Image (cartoon, rainbow, N blue to C red):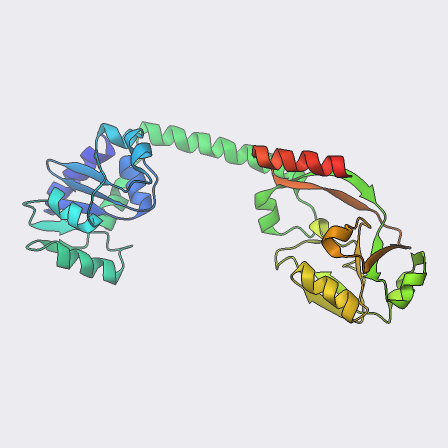
Length: 304
């Protein structure tokens, strides 16, 4: 029996003339189609998937089209559902996920019908029993999980967050650089060709804040692990460069500077630090880049 056939059997056993399914997970279970806005309506004689123009083409091409009428209503979804259920007296809705306002809307629109809970428990009961196709999918999913775990063991590094592990960012190196100090051309250190960490002590250190999930490994500065008495966190480039000039502050970066972008009042001086910076491009692993991204990367490679 299909999921739809089993649902109809349970509807009869529970005395429901119709079921309205609004949760994404149960819509996917019954119709095999994943979408965010719409309803599935099932009666003894009809089974309809109601969606809008964004999903109609995909819905018609999905497995749902084999058992469900694919409808794109020109009215509110609840009003269209009422028409599909014409003649029904007792309608079950999802008590576990439907909001109070959603329930009240159904009660108002489904005039002359008794709207009750029970659909969630009924469908949850169906989902407890897996058919052969579902078992095969579970086995395939577990095989993917096993392979992913075997791979990720070699990927994890100290100080990585769970978010970074989940994303598994892929780094493609463009070049390496010695750390440089970015300062204003009015800063007293500007006269030096090389600057030491001790030289920087009197000046505020400006750090570009990259969010709470940032990590040392993906930092733009090679200097975040060093304690500095005066540190200012900023979240945009304009503020950082204004403070470089206004407060005689400094930041640490690769030494690559563009006068057209940053102006001619910012200069770079070599920092005497036994570190190197790996400059490159970070992408999400196994994602195919768009033609615009490819063009951008090619332009960056030519520039450097």
